[in-house]
Picture 1 (tube, rainbow, N blue to C red):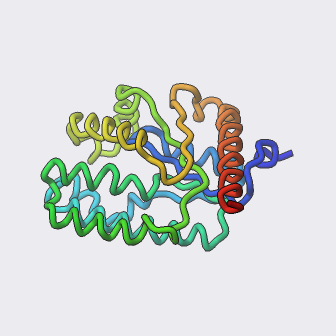
Picture 2 (picture 1 turned 180 degrees about the horizontal axis):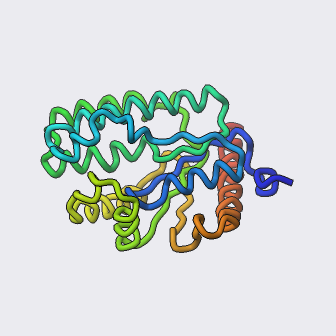
Length: 227
């Protein structure tokens, strides 16, 4: 029996992995996809034309970066659902507006006009009954020190040169954001509870929880549809 069948995870499921920078979203995405024989959807960091410029000048490039991410994630979300599911996605479209755009607006590195333009576009594209939401959002969390250590370990120069205060603020904003998130079911997982790099079988307890959450969510949707 394969793991997808063992834990009752439908083969058309769409799972999104969310969490602050450095928390291990890519590692979790790969591990889940390998275990379930799902396809992956990764954030296009290396081909992003604005990212390096953004880290050098937040105020100049924050709006451009957020529009780029919104367009790319929307296209990818559309592709996933047209394909028929069976995907694990690295980072959600919801984080762009709930975390990044809002943070830059409130810190004065995105003008109000740009912020309003961005949020109006986001609402028109995503916050409608026609936009297909994931079956489950897995939120990875851990201590700030753990997250900061991972950022330093992975060696991206533009991240290592970013002030620690920026990562602290993002960390706090993520905690606030997830506590108010309700676009789809949420499974919170602490990164200290498993070690996917050293213990590959540590993914199984995660799969068990994923199966339970998705089954319960689909039962709820079925009851609502019947009503």
